[in-house]
Length: 80
Image (cartoon, rainbow, N blue to C red; front, side):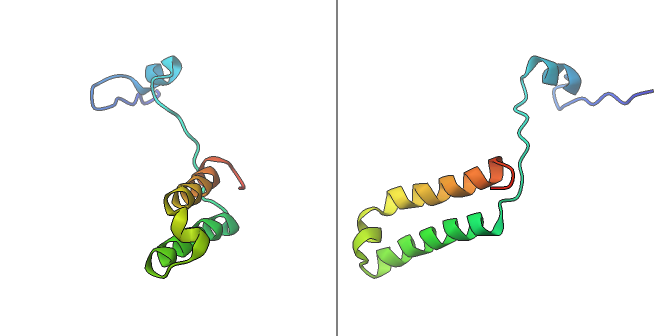
């Protein structure tokens, strides 16, 4: 006998997966290098907001976005 899993609304989980209603992501931990690159970029941006650094002060929002996207890619792509 197989156990049928239901979500909070009482819908069968297998039917939702067949229809594609649940976003089924396979997340992984990023490699140490990917994590460190994103942390270093974010730390330099924060430091650039305290002490005026030429490049990091002017492009702070864009660089924070790049750091977040690097970390996101490390989580979504296996072995990155």
